[in-house]
Amino acid sequence: MTDRDSSPTAASPGRPKDPAKREAILNAAKTLFLGNGYEASSMEAIAAEAGVSKLTLYSHFKDKEALFCAAVQATCENRLPRELFSPAPGMPIDQALRELGEAFWRLLSSPESVGLHRIMVATGATTPQLSRLFYEAGPQQVLDETRALLDRACAAGQLAIDDRTRAAEHFCSLIKGINHFHQLIGYAPPLDDAAMQAHVADVVALFVRAYAPG
Image 1 (tube, helix red, strand yellow):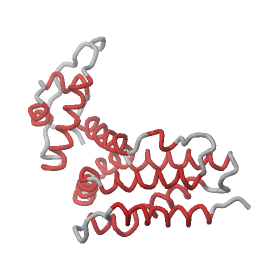
Image 2 (tube, rainbow, N blue to C red):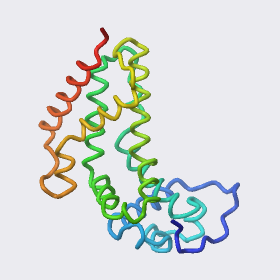
Image 3 (cartoon, rainbow, N blue to C red):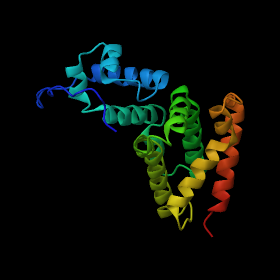
Image 4 (tube, rainbow, N blue to C red):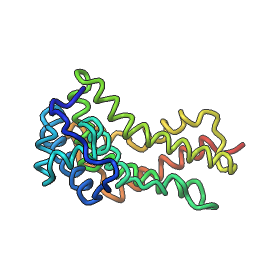
């Protein structure tokens, strides 16, 4: 899947990139992707929304696919900081998983995430390449980081898990719960904070009990 806009000559490789312009481009991309869909959001429209030239846009992102991946990654990183996957030494594993689980749930329930999931459901059958990009830029990264956290917890003797990839999938799926599906179809709003914390606590208690050492 290639953006129909022709890419102008890239800016000099040695020219430093402006972080503020990159942030403006990412925000504009998220706004247009969520509002208009991927195919209807041209690089020209994104540049105009961000208030930058197409040359500046292409100096940051080589094409629309790269920009889409970066927008998905930025959404995850802003709401799910990497330090959550590397808890302080000595932190009880249930506390680490609760903090991660609550942040992950808030990411899933954010307007950006719900909107991106709806785009994927609506277009996935006809644009499998876009689905792959979305999955690898967002969900796959979260699963990989969660698996790495479980690796460290097992090495420290806090958990005993044979298949940590599968366990990471279980944990993330349990955190999503039924409410995420309710949100996607517009059946119910997100849980309030107290209900969310109770849900995450239940998931963590079940998970830790299932993979307790011995």
